[in-house]
Image (cartoon, rainbow, N blue to C red):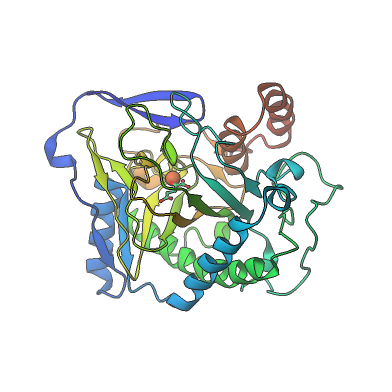
Length: 365
Ligand SMILES: O=C(O)CCC(=O)C(=O)O
Ligand SMILES: [Fe+2]
């Protein structure tokens, strides 16, 4: 069976024949508190064979997680008019509110059956860069910047729900710390010095998102998906699933959809395309989708993590046994193209693309 990697409008056949031994039928659970050598071995297996794993004992208190979900539920209950005030089209950072079926992740299927609110990394959300400093207020993006999100401070926060911003700030700060811990472990898995990515993670190219998936009928021959089949864009994703609403499905190499149900006290981590590309396909970025036929409302909270947008993603020295498979690309441009293609009208995408390409050509050393 052939299957595809979804990169905006491009579809790539990955494989026609897959050895059973490289497949998986469940998502491993990795305890972050196990001895370091065992931890590295489990991560190596999960990142190279599955591309998805749960982490337990991650150290983030449940109360901080609960606060984000409860303020998010309140936000999504607001009237459309209020939510539209922070619609992503009001800003230039490709983040903010997205309504039901605003986004078309898998263009071969119907648009996504979710609504979402997203925000982008900004130093005022980062415990290491000065929480509380230079908070940007208001719901309108600054107008002094160009059409891109490679500058920070573009978030659109709902003014009527200040508690959402507070809860996100607390949660996202903790996730950034966890992400910096994980990238050190990935460096070791890739035979690099543990601190290899540290500098590039000081101002990470990152976005967080809260998704609300309404329930949908169980029987439909051509259903819209909560989110269509896709691979994630950045280096890795830390996903928290709210409640007990199993709906996330992960495609294994033999073409079966493996359920990744919520497991209390864990996060799901998955490798994204940027780290697969950076590691010259040593790490696997795995296709997944959401179908919520549980009859319940579902909420989830992914945070996408990548290096600073000026980082050049060029296959790592330790992953070159078969030669480099990819050309260098700048992280910011790579992310922008992927987000913009499924969100902007074609004309607007093309107009902005030309500008982005001239502003952010990678400088290869
Ligand atoms: O809601 C989920 O469980 C997954 C969301 C997801 O895959 C994404 O936002 O990229
Ligand atoms: Fe995803």
